[in-house]
Image 1: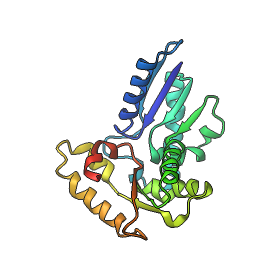
Image 2: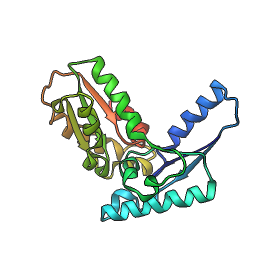
Image 3: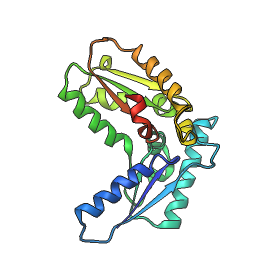
Length: 211
């Protein structure tokens, strides 16, 4: 089995590391190959910098076709929230000959479980501009019975790039404080338990600063 994991940057490497550990420690009857492919078109030009939705779709669609042709995977997992919200709109996805799944459904299921376990809680969803504008998480959660008043969405423009470039974290910390402050100001109840969802794989590298 050959699984290709992709992200628009280095965030998805944490997902690959988890998958490798799972495969190594659980044991599989068949040989498992994991390939990571970076979908970012350039080091200094990512999907959230693109001027139009159509350019994002065309770029990601072209990438999916290229990696399928080059690596011939048995399945593709999109370990990126930005790309996962674009995925269903790509022509590639509509006619895919192999299973292609995104991280949004995975994350939404975990978030739903946490919200159901604590009925008083509120979800604060942090993400890129593209992820938040798509509204995928609130839509999935409300369709599954979570009241819209329990959901706060907060875009953090440029934060993923800052995290990638800021090894020491000194530039990242004030950006996260600003983003978290904006989110907390939107809470309907200040006494509610908060479930913070880091809806970008890059954010996990600085989870302690979000906390």
